[in-house]
Every structure is written in structure tokens, then in C-alpha cells.
Image (tube, rainbow, N blue to C red; front, side):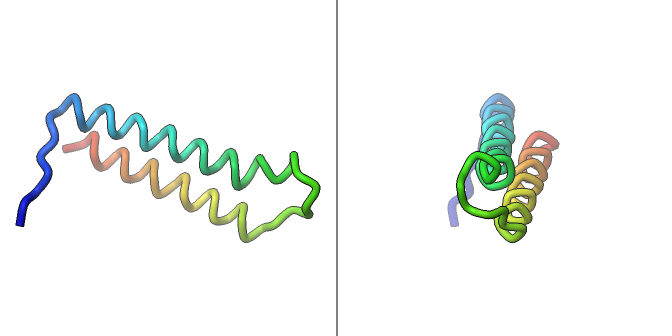
Length: 65
């Protein structure tokens, strides 16, 4: 089985973009609800927070190696 090996710079760039993706997920699913006409959804907000936390944790793991 082949394993993708990233250089230190590539891991840093990927970690940075994962953080950006987490911020977009939180912005869309949590804060974006206040801009729409639909009622607030706690499930969507919780999913947004979970996505944000998961992507930030993944970025931290990548940058640690």
C-alpha cells in the first residue's frame, strides 16, 4: 500500500488550509443561520462546531509531525 509522504512545507500548507476550511464550516453552519429566514437550527450549529473542531484537530496533528 502506498503512503502519501508530505514535506514539512506541504504539511504546514495543508494544516493552514484545514484551519481555513474549519472557519468556513463554522461560519456557514453557525453564524450563517442568523442571515437567513429559516429558524435557528441547533443541529446545524452543533454540526458546524463539530466540523470546526475536527478540522482544527486534524490540522494540529498534521503540523505536529
